[in-house]
Image 1 (cartoon, rainbow, N blue to C red):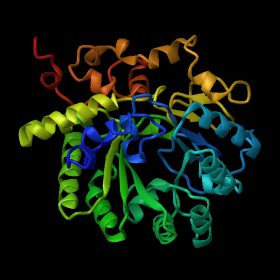
Image 2 (image 1 turned 30 degrees about the vertical axis):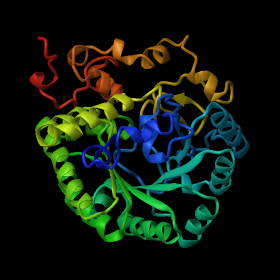
Image 3 (image 1 turned 60 degrees about the vertical axis):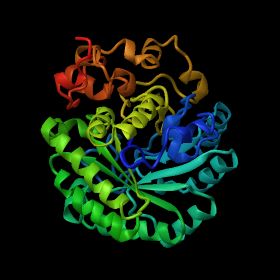
Image 4 (image 1 turned 90 degrees about the horizontal axis):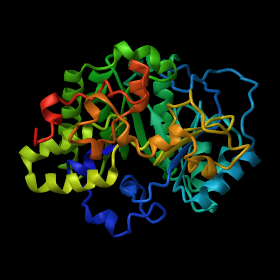
Amino acid sequence: MIGISKLYCGAVEASDPLRYGRESKRLPSHLLQFSKDKKPVVVWNMTKRCNLKCVHCYAQAKDEDFHGNELTTEEGKRLIDDLAAFGSPVMLFSGGEPVLREDLPELIDYAVTKGMRAVISTNGTLITEEKARVFAKYSLSYIGVSLDGIGDVNDSFRGVKGAYEKAVIGIRNAKQAGIKVGLRFTINKRNYEEIPKVFDLIEKEGIERVCFYHLVYAGRGSKLIDEDLSHTEARRTVDYILDRTRIVFDKDNPLEVLTVDNHADGPYVYMRLLKEDPRRAAEVYELLAMNEGNASGVGIGCVDEEGNVHADQFWRHYSFGNVRERPFSEIWMDTTNDLMARLKEKKRFVKGRCAPCKWLSICGGNFRVRAEAKTGDVWAEDPQCYLTDEEIRPQDE
């Protein structure tokens, strides 16, 4: 997760996380990525059911009753108990579509009473005025709404006509209830030219945050490998996001802009600042070093609807254990599992261009799931690193 407004526009200084000792439990939400202890933000995919049919859904959710073995309300509370005691700062309720679970407000309330920040990731279409008021009552911190374009472009991704309009209504309902709202946009060839319109929507609706996700080849998204951006398109897209964020920032709009799941964006921002503002570039390098790049298996984790623990929400093909059998905290720290042990020191094991890259310490080897999907080797170089060989070459070579 690369904070464009934080880094490129100077919304955060290196001294900001230091004031809190860089401890996850003490840091405000916008500084969590700079924590020292890297206590995991946990995504709980609490249901596989969804009212939409998104073509890139990593969970392969559908609008049907799976007759599955979802964690119950009480099991969810035990999970929250363990995460709160472990020091996880955020409980992220996701799916499928988490709003379809009737116990969501109860679980939000429970997480908050345990001292965690509660947030949800949703398609937004089911957030009525009443639901928004209930979420606000139980101190929900944030709602992330997935939109992948405007109007029909979004609906083509969601597989349901009218999904865009319903999502916009859901956003307005959440904002009216006083809940912070952000957008989640997955970049690919079908929609990257929609990004200017998405910024227009953000400014029009007063949306406070946007996360631009680079495509990860997982779940149904694995069928979209050939629709990922070329390296040239990726660079051009990141440049546009930087430029547009600067324009918004210069209007005194506190919009938080982030890119997610391609840690080449960090060095790219730094190199651009070296040309534009060397003093700020030095500050940004210090922040990127705190961030440490890819956090799978360290600073972010996932529990699926049946209680299986994954390195992040895109690793559903590999489970480290189940929270019905052992607490998440125990599973997470069990380095007798070779993959878990290596993920916690992934910089030692990456191959190809990643191994000698001069940005390895601030990128962390980028995204392992994407490398595995493309090559079959979880430690191979990430095919979507768009930095050139010259840009990544150590200076002493």
